Image (cartoon, rainbow, N blue to C red; front, side, top):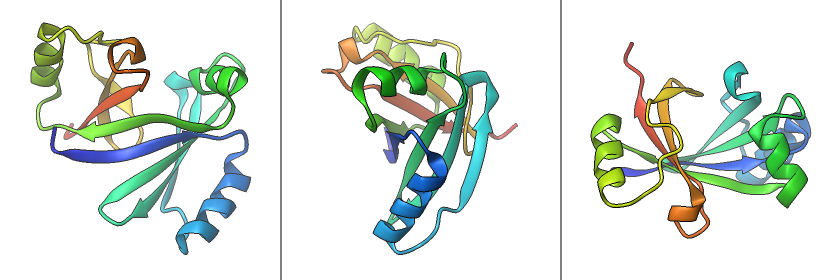
Length: 134
């Protein structure tokens, strides 16, 4: 793993949260994107060498909506940049981590993503991200 790529924060109202975090960081978000397959609308902020991703569920059945209903707004996941996501999945599975989706899927911000189950990472949802060069 190369670095923390971003920290994902679940929010109820993306527009309201964009204003809040723009005030906090002193600059606006640089991108809003919807990932229909995940039922989520995202917004990204550059903060130093890392990014913050705000996530709003677009329907009641989306993972983000369910997360907020159960735990409230807050940190949802930590994403790490990797060079070869398939190699990382193999390595992590071999080491006993629970991989939620072994086949990388298209995520926001032009990334291929895989998630690790929080049960195998001390309660933290971990996302692996690789630039999607397709």
